[in-house]
Image 1 (cartoon, rainbow over the protein chains, first blue to last red):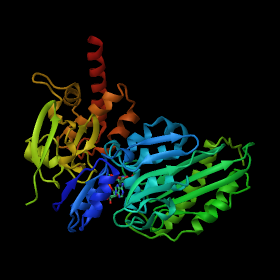
Image 2 (image 1 turned 135 degrees about the vertical axis):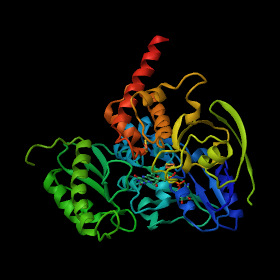
Image 3 (image 1 turned 120 degrees about the vertical axis):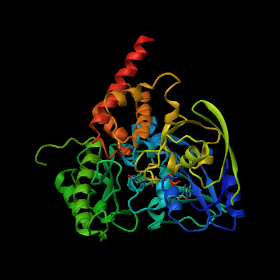
Image 4 (image 1 turned 90 degrees about the vertical axis):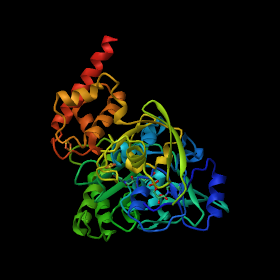
Length: 296
Length: 163
Ligand SMILES: Cc1cc2nc3c(=O)[nH]c(=O)nc-3n(C[C@H](O)[C@H](O)[C@H](O)COP(=O)(O)OP(=O)(O)OC[C@H]3O[C@@H](n4cnc5c(N)ncnc54)[C@H](O)[C@@H]3O)c2cc1C
Ligand code: FES
Ligand code: FES
């Protein structure tokens, strides 16, 4: 690894000052599970690595029934899946937090790092996207909010301006009769990166027999995780049954144009998106309270 | 040469102070600076678990942590498990069940197993295999490792009952 300077600010203000005063390349360090691997294989000159884990706002996980969930950008997966309000209200966040890496990775890897790294296969990004998450970002000009679907702009590139950092991710409280799920396909059940992944949330009416709203996010099948808008819209007003989920799965498949790489071919990815979307919607509907009848 | 930073931490129960350059990993610091060569470098990118250590009782890969990050923290490496006279029950179990062949992965498995059994005294086979998914072994085929973990759980439970 090339050498660099290291700072570990304890407040957001200190962090912003450090970033603004440094004319060279500044990289932020959360769990380091992406960053250290990248620094080892890079020839880039880095001025400063700034460890943001000591800033309290970036470590918190807070839940409020009205304003929803706040996940500090540097909170590791294990802190997320050990949080009681997350366990009680956000099952698809638990799905994602428990499949990223193995236990040692989960004790370090943060959702903020997953998002800022902007990998097309970021599992946490897919799960958060289907829940309508908002990213809270701070820079010299103050705080601004970026909808999560606008946060990743290309593989490895995010929407942060120079001198900005992610503070937290906000997820609205779950609506009544709603459910969510995150699923991915990997050749090995654990410690592997998604060939394709799907996050879905679904909201049912009070009789649990009609879909009021749905949101589907697709992972590892485009330059960034993406929303499947047409597939999501196709579900509104329908009964939460297999035929509706299959139609949405077809629309999700149609909406993507994936690449072939070492993990899988374009055709395999398209096929997987169909299967995963259908399964993910079924599981989300079950979590929303829908009990499927045989044959439907 | 880049500037040296002073790190103060507790390693295996002992307070230590050492110098590190910012880009040095915890694994390099442990092995090259502190002479604690029990933790191994397998992949140096978080995939094999040979460098597993505990920071504040949490399992991590020392190759993905900077040495400077353990300032003020409590670190346990495989060297910290046995006391002067006897092996830790996890180590004893790996010996009794032949949970190793070449042994390169073993320090990582032993530390990861301790982290598991400290949280879950009676893990199922599934829980054991999932917990150890981040540790790779090229020799044993894993079955003997799983058996070692089961025996370790039993030994640790027996010794708790005796107290
Ligand atoms: C063995 C292994 C297995 C893995 N498995 C998976 C997997 O199954 N699924 C998956 O999605 N990923 C996986 N990953 C990738 C990685 O663990 C995740 O992307 C993780 O969530 C990154 O979080 P981190 O805290 O470690 O980020 P870091 O490595 O600290 O940072 C990642 C990037 O984000 C930037 N950054 C961090 N915090 C901020 C901030 N607050 N503001 C602005 N920029 C910031 C950093 O500068 C860096 O560019 C795996 C990695 C390894 C090594
Ligand atoms: S050397 Fe650290 S995980 Fe392989
Ligand atoms: S015993 Fe040889 S790698 Fe595990």
